[in-house]
Length: 233
Image: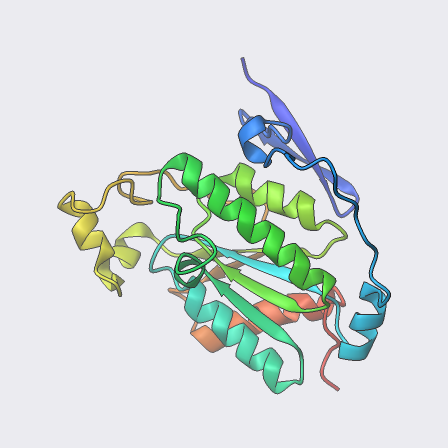
């Protein structure tokens, strides 16, 4: 049976036809096991940290196929903002798997947990007043939407790094597509595992048509328009 689920964003509702947005689904959220814990409010507030940094903490979530240019673009945006004296950080998919998520593979369940953890870390960066770029394939819409709900406060900017599969495969900077085609790599997104493109991302960047600098500026322009960073005078 077709169902439509809704996610409130920017004062409006977004419909997801034929798509189950199961925010309460057990494997979407980590079960709270500890019961003898108490949340401690910080003496310095997020607003005070943001005032000091002259910016608003937010997540710029880059999603797209392997080879689409996510990491390159995320670092370009971070660099341009850094030159403007903004405090930024890049959470890269490969880098995170060297430490925090090194016990996770690429099964659907592990991919979900990978993004869940990244969402929680990104939330901490936002609370610190940092502009954090996340560069992850993050193939499932539900996982990205869960990160959006977690961050809230209009501080989640989804950037779809659009690039056709054949172009990504031609680029193949890490040689992963070649290995996936020969069966050496299992469950590879775009070849033997699905990728669910965003329905209504805040920004769509086509890395075939635009240069990296042009793409980065497109993202920064959105951040300026939404007052997440002040416009250059």
